[in-house]
Length: 220
Ligand SMILES: [Mg+2]
Ligand SMILES: [Zn+2]
Picture 1 (cartoon, rainbow, N blue to C red):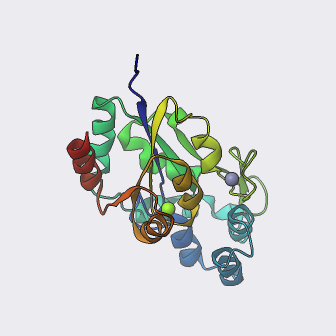
Picture 2: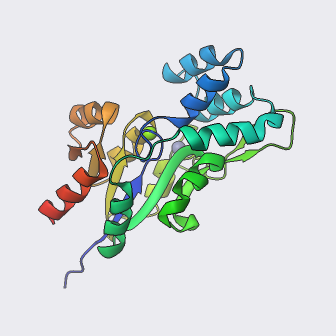
Picture 3: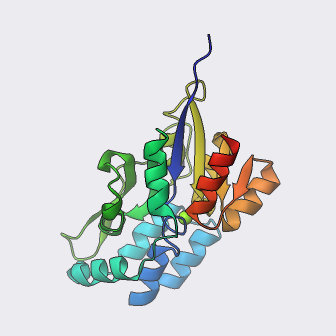
């Protein structure tokens, strides 16, 4: 007896659901002294993503809370077809999880119009009660991941065993590499395309979420 595997999608947020990276946009806009070397250290992998993102936000005074939230939520552009993709997943009984290295104060408000249950949205937290913005990490790495991800995508993906699930990653960049290596199929943009090619990971490039819907329909 064979049982069909349940399809599950792990979708990145920054640069995937939104056109641009929101963390970079926020830091560039408010331009606090000292952010550039921290960003360079993260890109060069001298600092973990968790450490770098924590240090970047610690440069912003917590008193700027409303301004930061207003800027973050007003500048973001949702990628074309995302709303249709959420509906498509619902109709096809595909479980859709948002696995984001972004921060709660912009991830939740920007996703609100799409009606994704909050227990299917994973992102980092924030605390504005001190002098500066403190990022909190409710979904840190667990064994065997020791990348100090902050929001650990592989830890979440591992909860879905390949014996029961057909797992799909949708993403664009560095934070998606490790999860892409674990799953059965990847929809990739930007740097993630090259990574999938290098590592021979089964993948299809996409530009909009309409492309992904079309590809799934075509391939069953
Ligand atoms: Mg991304
Ligand atoms: Zn991790």
